[in-house]
Length: 113
Length: 115
Image (cartoon, each protein chain N blue to C red):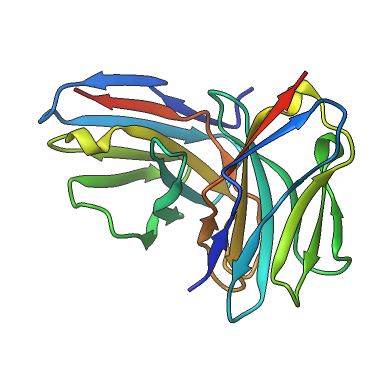
């Protein structure tokens, strides 16, 4: 069965500083990887996804993530964060041929003015 | 023009009551899901329906019963509510199909509080 680990439960970052949110997955078969964002009191919104092809994936709001198969990672990055990026970020994995989406425990990104 | 909508947004009820949460999607998707997000923000799938047929049924107490009257609706009925049922419940939908790579679209959530 697949699993997702987000080691950092909270990440405080100064405004305009870069940020990296870590995500590692475990699966014995091909995977598809996703990052979702949840703003306070809202539902989840897709930031970006890796299906195949280029390992560097660009998403909305200036975020990008890099798929690293050898390290089984899919870390999310942004070169310069804004106050509006304050939210909970979830990494998720889906195994090829399976409908089920497995989420990590989330990372709370707090932007410090 | 909401894609995935849930009602109610907030639900406060007493232990032992029976309640329902409704979900509707206007995206023409074939597959719908229910997720539970606990107080620590952990998000776990509960059920999934594809064209009104149950395809995912995780380990969930049988007090929880999903009902899909048509492929645009997936309701969640909960009997004999317990304190531990307090959580935010999210509905989601996707075009569906295990071989298709599909994004799941989430509703705004229903915050259930059991007193």
